[in-house]
Amino acid sequence: MAKTRVDGINLSYKVDGRGEPLVLIMGFAGTQMGWIFQRLAFRKYFQVISFDNRGVGGSDKPSGPYTMRSMADDTIGLMDHLGIDKAHILGVSMGGMIAQEVAINYPKRVRKLVLGCTFARTDETGGHSPEYAKALGLGEDCSDNDLRSLTIEKVLSTVFSLAFNSRLYRMSVVPLSKVYARLVATEGVAAQFEAIVGHDTLDRLNMIEAPTMVIMGTQDRLIRPSSSEVIANRIPNATLVKVDGGSHAFFLGMRGRFNREVLDFLRGS
Image (cartoon, rainbow, N blue to C red):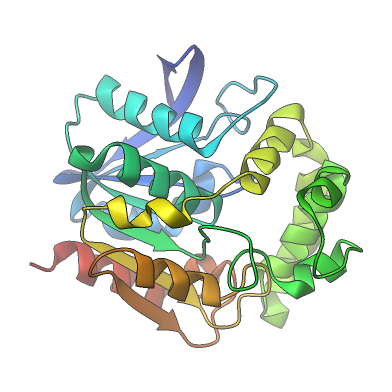
């Protein structure tokens, strides 16, 4: 992995393939290794750029506060370093929140936008699911302060336990993810969680100019599937794709379908 200095921190990144640039933005507490199946599929058609968000992996892990805007600025700083004027942007979960801020604040830098399993605001129609709140030991109407009172270890173990639905993945991945949760329960990951709690782009989504696809799994237990409908309704001419039975981590568990939908959208006219 290469590194570069962006906004006062070192970001770890990798470039694969050739063609139009495609920037992949990973979700909460995840590293660019989570894109393994997408890099393999997409590098045949695109120059694929993946990186570790601030707070995780090989990138620096400064203490907070972080915001989605600051992490969007990191993304643009990496594009600047690589000499990329304009790129396709794909983000999942927290990465989708960062991608929203990229498209809103840097509209001329985005060719096409893909937002996966993400939300724009936490309210009665979008945000984290009631099952997530219950698993955290909170009520459906929990406040931001309730979320901030939790230990980051509790948040991580809950997120990982709800991200996958299939029995095979839950038996193989969840036990390992609990070990991972203990290892990455750092100030940087806590600062990422704080940025998620404060995320709100709902009233600015109409500012997105790039052709947009919003894609989600219908059985997402972590984020309300209705969140994607809300986003698609607010972004001009956005396309909504529902993957039947898809979990929150459907880009891994149902990667064939996910990758086909993304490639069809990005390579279409």
